Length: 289
Ligand SMILES: Cc1cc2nc3c(=O)[nH]c(=O)nc-3n(C[C@H](O)[C@H](O)[C@H](O)COP(=O)(O)OP(=O)(O)OC[C@H]3O[C@@H](n4cnc5c(N)ncnc54)[C@H](O)[C@@H]3O)c2cc1C
Image 1 (cartoon, rainbow, N blue to C red):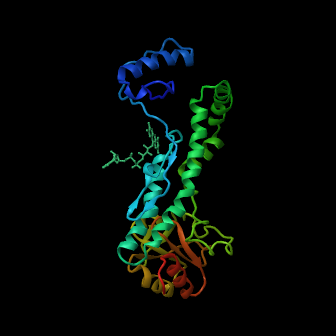
Image 2: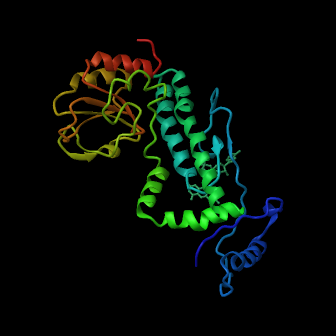
C-alpha cells in the first residue's frame, strides 16, 4: 500500500469527483506514466481532490481580527510547508497577544507580528510553487527535469540534508524586523537578535539541568553566565513580570546575557548595563518609559 497524487486536467470538474472517479483516473494514469501494467489499484483508504491556491492575505491584522496559518497565506501543499508556517505564525503572535491583554505592551506590538511573519508568506510560496511545477508539471521540459535531474538529486544525502533544513524553517530569523532594528549591525556573533536560539543545555536557578526550549512556550528566558545577571533579570521583570525564567548556560563561549522570547527567538543580547536592556524592552513593547 502506498499513497500518491496526480494532477487533473485544469479544465476538469475535479471538485465533484467521488472515490470511484479518482480511482478510475489513477487506473489510467499509472500505466501511462510508469509503463507498468501489472499494478492493480483498488480499496483506496482515502481519496480527496484539492485545488492549489497561491493567495496571501492583504493584511494579517484588521483591528481585533488577526489572521494566521492558511487564512493568511495559502499555497501549494507540495513541499510540506503549510503546518510549520502556520505554527510559526501562532508562536510569533501568542506571546504578543498575551502581553497586550495583560497591559504590559501597547497594541502597536501586534503590528510587529505581520512585519516579522509576512516576508515568509512570499518566500515559502515561491519555493512550493517551484516544487509543484517540478513534481506535477506536464511539459516536456518539466518531465525531463523531474526524471533526469530532480530524482537523481533527491537521492543524494547532501541534497536530502539541505532539503530537510530548508523545510524545517529552523533558519527563520527576524533580524530585519522592527524588534531587532538597531540591535544587529554591531554584533557579528550568532545568534543575533531576531535569530532562533537552538535548544541549548542549561541549568535552572536550583541547579537542575534543563533544555532551553522546555522552559519557553509561555515564558521568556534570561540566559547568562553563572552569577552575572541579577540586575538584568530585575530590569526585565519590571516590564515582563514573573514570566521570565533565569537560566545559566554551561557553554564557556557565552559571556553575555541573552533575553529569549517565548517563541525561541533572541530578543536582546549584550554585556551592556541593565538600563540598556530596559530601554530596548520599552522600545519593543512600544511603551513609553
Ligand atoms: C492535500 C494536502 C496535503 C497537505 N500536505 C501537507 C504536508 O504534508 N505538510 C504540511 O505542512 N502541510 C500540508 N498541507 C497544508 C496543511 O494542511 C495546511 O497548511 C494546514 O492544515 C493549515 O492549518 P490551518 O489551521 O491554518 O487551517 P485549516 O487546517 O484549514 O483549519 C481551519 C479550520 O477552521 C475551520 N473553519 C473555517 N471556517 C470557519 C468558521 N467560519 N467558523 C468556525 N470554523 C471555521 C475549518 O473547518 C478548519 O477546521 C496539505 C494540504 C493539502 C490540501
